[in-house]
Image (tube, rainbow, N blue to C red):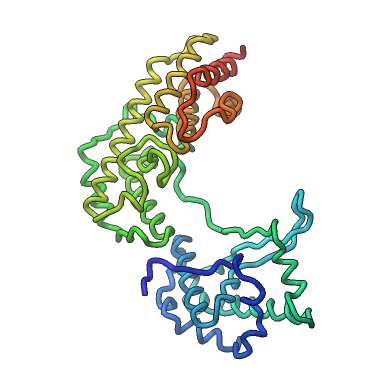
Length: 373
């Protein structure tokens, strides 16, 4: 059995026949505590304080092992639900994923067993409130079609998205960066962390990529987070990097993977150098010069579009570069979103090069917003 991926039946796909406790008269809640301790994944409990992706994946492995022994109904142990008022829907059931904390192995396994038993008892209560055949009213209520929500419950990423960085974060002017050093640095980082299989669980792949990126940040600075901002639909959508696509398509052997990452980092660096050079063609901007702003914005939109090939999500990179230019020109960052949202306003689309008149209209709107015309 592979330990780098897991398949679970989603709770949202189960109906009452799948979870009805009367269909499993042999289930003994008192035996769950002993059962969880003999399941194979119980020997692999992550240490306390481990990254959430490791603990989440481990809980899924345990759930899959429990489902194999007890049935798919058990997948509901990790969810809680409440009835909440939702605008436009009234009072609806809201389900949330809640993994217990991982501390000592003994405490963690006890919490898991207790949660499984609690889920069983909840289903027993639902069943006991209904004497006749068919689906109990309680189950129909909490699983009402339509507005039921299943919340993933995942933590926020530890590293920023490239579009969240400021221009000072990424401006390569005056930085001490030697492209010749990258290959060796990346090779060391790739060699230090076991490379997951291409088909491994996404959490393992995501954590590996983040570990490598964190090592690059430590060596070169925060600006490197954009090395995987690939053209089109990749790990990060709609970026300027062509040397990397995504884990599934760009990972091979440790050696070829290191080569691809090194090429992507150098490419990202060179793009930032190119962006700075383009900024220098227009900065400093003459005060109140509407036409100068129009030319600059139109030029940058076209440059980003050409680099991203107008692929999926290219406009995200475009808005990022325009925001950097506003910042480099001294426009307060608190104004950026309003200026750009008002100017772009959904005019750019994935896989579509905008007509010249649309680019010019966006440039005019940004210019007018900046100079107050």
